[in-house]
Length: 145
Length: 181
Image 1 (cartoon, rainbow over the protein chains, first blue to last red):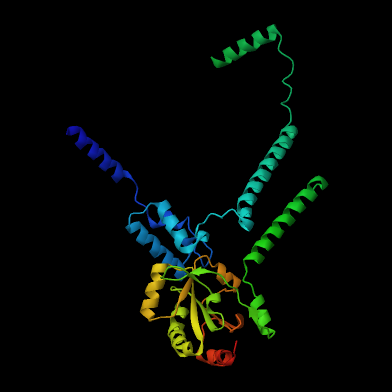
Image 2: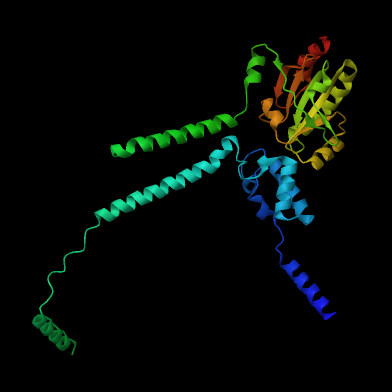
């Protein structure tokens, strides 16, 4: 019996710990279907309707993924902020990748040039002979006193 | 800029500009219907099977071959659509005995809210649901509401980009109703 109660408490705690989905959680991953801007920055009438739709689904206890699926069912795949991956949309994946690759290549190129241009450290000169070294140590010791 | 870098950088910049130009051009509304109508032509109306709003099954313009169709693109969140709805319902009732009808296309809308909107406005004509805006794109829809007059041969005879008025309907719809298939 005690084991069952402990298990029920644990399950209750874990359920309580699961974060509740909020409107801002979903809004920044969804587009206003008419104005084609992120929903969280749109004030168009259709954006208000989409927000109301999300609030209703939150009230029904849906998870973020379930809400996004419901939005797609209602407004079509363009409602998601991520590109579909087909046709011109593929550019949204390729262009940032290409830019990152170009930037990386640029950094490697510049780093190589910078390394070649960095002057070698100045020659420290010949080592002191043992007599001079002893004399220098003695003078530094006297100086410290 | 060093000659070694000039061509790759120029080519990359040109490719980026071309990509942006294509992106902007491909997302703009299609104005070919308006251009052909302005030239006095009638344009073959696009036909697409769409789900019937608030009912099972699908419907399309093809179901009304031989009839004059007032094809109205609307959405429940669009205020001007709300304003013109009573006129469209009256028109539907008036033209139905003359082998004609109003057919709605509800675009990018919540089904629940669209049905509530129709109930509130007392609308009885059928609407189809263009969830993805695919059909509206074929019609070159760029704003709401928009209305197209389809003749008995299934061709677009007139287009109204914006709220429809009684005067516009009198001018363009009446002659179509007189035509025989």
